[in-house]
Length: 242
Image (cartoon, rainbow, N blue to C red; front, side, top):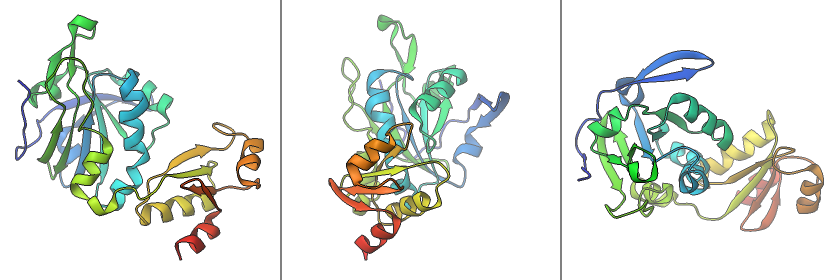
């Protein structure tokens, strides 16, 4: 039986994590105390729904979450820290804190540890999300207790609509950037301030310079597109919102 823990304090658990090739221990208090945190849990790193939809959308909407009072977004899975670190690098999800519940202790204490031995997974977390304020669970979205791996209510859009409905994404936005670009940072900050989630494509890694020219007619970054319309750079974006 999956347990809804709304109104209760998050379980007190220590998490061994590997950071910069050194072992650290994170605990529930430092992760949740005095903060507003959105945590979403999923069955496993590198699995299809988790990699294609669940995690990427939280990463995409992270600026909107944080503009509306969320201090951190945590992705939890019953995987070891090395797997979670590899998945974080593969997903390029710098806006998410990856939390390895390797022994399933947190998942068990919160009532979300399930048996997936029939598909070779062993014990894993059920898929859910929760809003935690100062260590107390305010809201949980738990996927229905049916066969398989349902994905209906623990998504980023459902969580955002719960606590900040006015901030739900108004349009589809894509921004092309490159690392350490101050104008790109300015444009992303403006989009977050206006409550827009965006897909970010990085120059060279995800799109070529010739591709950038073909899409925008320019070879500078950032280049912003809203609902398929080319807006331009950071100054053009300011003018658009003005």
